Image (cartoon, rainbow, N blue to C red; front, top):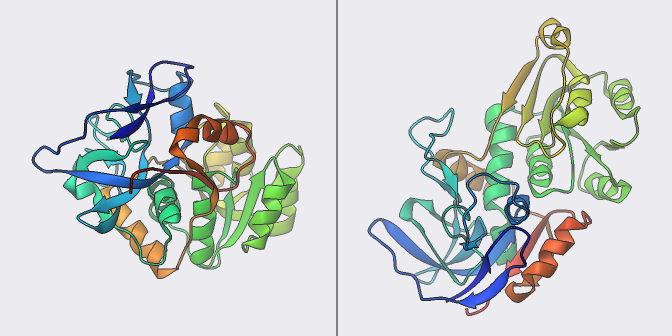
Length: 322
């Protein structure tokens, strides 16, 4: 097999030959066609992730074949028995277990799902981690419904873009933020009502004046922008956060209790969430946005493309050998 291997913090990823994998009982070898990159992979390379170990094959998202059947991989391992939260044993494929940036990967049989028939192989590879995270945030935690006004922050990222698409599919009136006018315009071309450049200190006032207040927030950044977004919520509103790339935020308690607001955290999701997400994507014919496709041996160039912050959607790797 061929694998893209990271040997240490800050090092470039190396393409190496390894011994072919064999599945233990209850597990399955998936022969990969495509994989997708998540910011998690970049953070691991930068040493900004817990539980680092090297060498490691990164990658949580993968599409491939099992017995001539096209499949994709549910990247969460050992969630546990509670639908509300994961157990301490929960982990995500790609650390500490070797992941999908290779021609083969071993996963539990319960983590192998059929590809929705309307997706291309590249789109299927782009779906698992971002789709699962977005679905749980939009549908399980925020419970977005038709006619609601929803703000999705940081549009252009994989999770945010799928969250936008899912909220639109639910019939919501969707608004977005971004640091890029181009990304906002692309979101508007996909059905978003309006977008706001978060670098503008007046963006939240503009959103409130335009909408009179929003019902739900889907946020993956945290930081001051999340606090400003919460200020746009109507009484009884819900804010869901799935990440903290912009750091901590402060919130005056009066804003929370007086407006009867609900703050929820979420990460990834259960096997049931994953199955429901695939059904939702198939029902609404949602196509994950693929920003670019790189061959596996150009993985370092693909990482640099993501670091440039120019992509809208997911960056996918084409795996050789099939």
